[in-house]
Length: 148
Length: 149
Image (cartoon, rainbow over all chains, first blue to last red; front, side):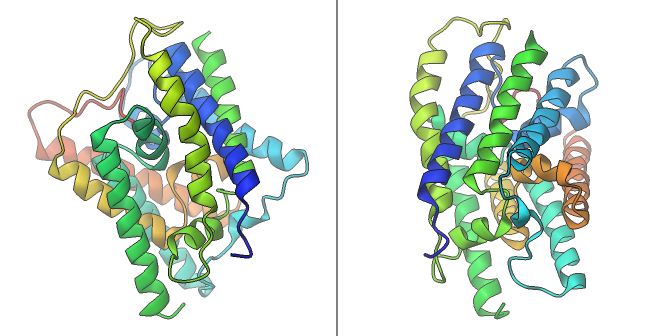
């Protein structure tokens, strides 16, 4: 557990919780990132503006951390130490599955895991247990069967 | 006003993701790899956020309306269905293969990393496919996307 960072993880988590509270309190929206993206991709109403601003702010928030000296070098880490081509293939397959799965399943880690559980939604509890399980199982298979 | 609060919330959200270390796919895989060198940090990120939202959401949702909007845009569905389960299962596999979920991936766009941008492009295509697939598959009422989490 040499990489375990409980303090920064908890502090970052609290900020995410506060951010979700501000969005719900002011405009009655849940800070589910896949939902915000999904609405932007399909809707053609006036509802677009806050979504665009939200995604922009997300990028600015992460960039501010880097601007003030935070280490973001982990962004391009290749967690399984795959060759370049296989890593790109994994990112494409992963991206397609994450996009498709979160839209069909109405949420991702933030939507179900933080906002949904925050309002004690049974659907979100079930979704979180399922995506955590399939993710854990997939990592187990990649690590132990493919040996990376 | 809506734009301003959307901006404040999202900057905090992006900052929180970065501080928590969740922009790093290795931290995510480290959490999911429970039989390997397990890194429980992700549980502390979710825990930190939930300590806030479990109480604050209860307090916020006691209000008749949000401060600068007429209604709370909450998901309508409250039953478990095949879509929720299939979608969550598919998402989990993609998350494990890439180490990325939508929040960290989109927040990292500003770092202009070529591989991350490829992931984001695939994420957008996957999301579009799901919505198109759904609209073709169910010619009754389009899925309500607005308030979904």
